[in-house]
Image (cartoon, rainbow, N blue to C red; front, side):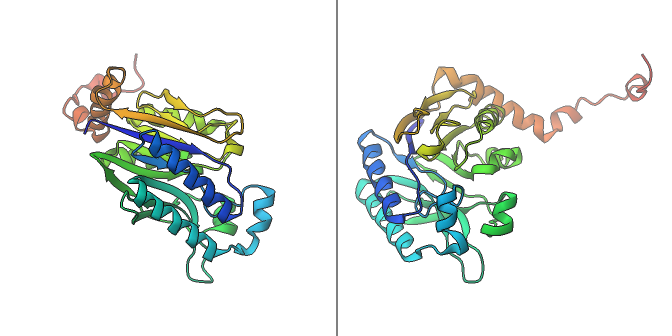
Length: 282
């Protein structure tokens, strides 16, 4: 297939797994009704994220209701199977005590099965010091001929992760965040344009003023966006390899830059010239 519709959700994220799960399922139904094949949710969408004061207090010491988190994830998976919808949803993933949890994105297939999980690799200073155990593996999966990768929040500051996904043949990176840093928007657009990737962004409604949920094209421009006014929202965007506006980014710039990064193109044209070697002459 040369086209696929994805949805980026913008929901309120708190520290009540049941309320979070209800919001996720409502948006799943809306995404499927709008023709989406895959819907993406923010960082911590089910469990909550200890970024705000209220959530930090509720999650202090990781007094998370893990049974409720698991129940909500099962409910999301069951609905994904009923709707025939792929779902990527954030949540803390419990490890064996006393190990800290992972900060994760769960990948649930249109059959309602968990087929993978991305565990945040580049945790922030606070996360790695107090909150989370890091992950170490990329997450890549395919839907209808499109390849997806996953990234979380502060990882937007690490271009090597996005170049790694591009080298793996990823078409679209699903970037879920819980941040109010407006520079994330600049970085996401830059990574999309530099690597020739679609980047789908999902953030909590309360963080949307800095960077609303939406989809950035491989040319670095937004193709669709929720409002940045703090309200819940959903945006569906068609990833279309045949879109003339994306021809240069997808079919010219991306393969050319892959050759350039490999270096062989330049080595083949290295010259043996004393005027090249001498760096202190005009």
